[in-house]
Length: 210
Image (cartoon, rainbow, N blue to C red; front, side, top):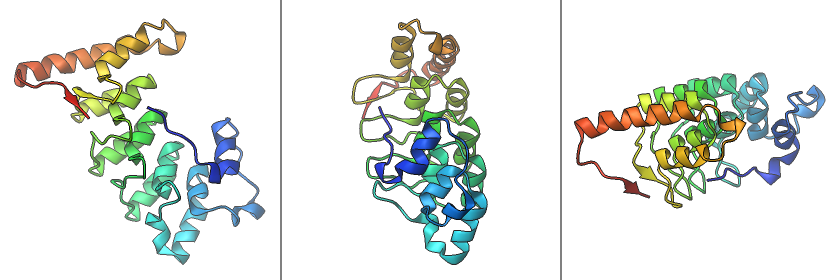
């Protein structure tokens, strides 16, 4: 369950992945693609590009990523909100079945996750190896994202291709005893509580395999 970067956009995006939040100089903004601008959080530049070419709103890059997907992947809430307001389709699926919701869940951006859920995205969408938004949120130890997804009915029985359900993945990560997974007991509690509710209301529901 990995989300890999786009080499074609290495300059702007790699800097941001390394924690360099400083935006590029205004003189160079014109050289960036719409996708790079979205990932950089350049709302005004994104708006300017759209005013000249509305087709950029839904344009997919080499991997099938849209500007909305790049903004979601890097936690750029202002850009996400702007693009959604302009009519960007949050249900678009990239070449390896990545979605804006999966990318936001993987990054732990709960405000974006909640915004996308309000726009009717498929909460159980899965990528090339069966990873769902819930599985990615659990893997990243993003408690708030897990909570938001469960509250909206994310399916806890779906397993990835590697055979992990959200509960099994949380347990496996908890066995690492890493400080980075200090919040996993909360995740386990949330999943177990939801499972008890589901088992009470739907006692015959079985685990699904992608």
